[in-house]
Image (tube, rainbow, N blue to C red; front, side, top):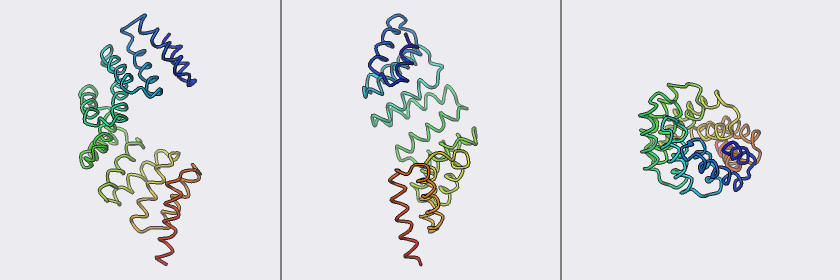
Length: 219
């Protein structure tokens, strides 16, 4: 029944998926994977409190699976409960202190709390463990940007692009850094690249026009 739930969830049939997961956990209340799938389904249905409860039950039944904790962090961030998310991700680090994903999520939560210097340290640990971790490089860059440390931010965003050229936000953020460093031609190039990935990316289109205006003023 849990596999049926997974298949239905992948098809976007969330009500039917929930019914299947409910059947699975009735048959085996200790089936952590089914509780986690139930939580994922409830999140898609916008039932965040129930989703969180399911993730917590998944952890209770199998406390060694890191993703059950990460899913809790996601829900808590969705709900604006950032301090609680920080506790969960901190507990997860005690279980897996050398896991790059957990360190990156630790950085993410700290960034959401606007504790940027601490977040930079956590993101740096993530990239030490996995140098090709584009998402962590981008998160670190966002922290530097929030502190208006644009040279450091630019380096981080460039590292993100080097490891993943497909994310529109990595190009956009690189453009923002160039723009704040006064390199409007480079900024324009980055925003145009972002729009080549997603022509409907409104933030990049707006920043592209602004960078062109700034370049014209400089001339």
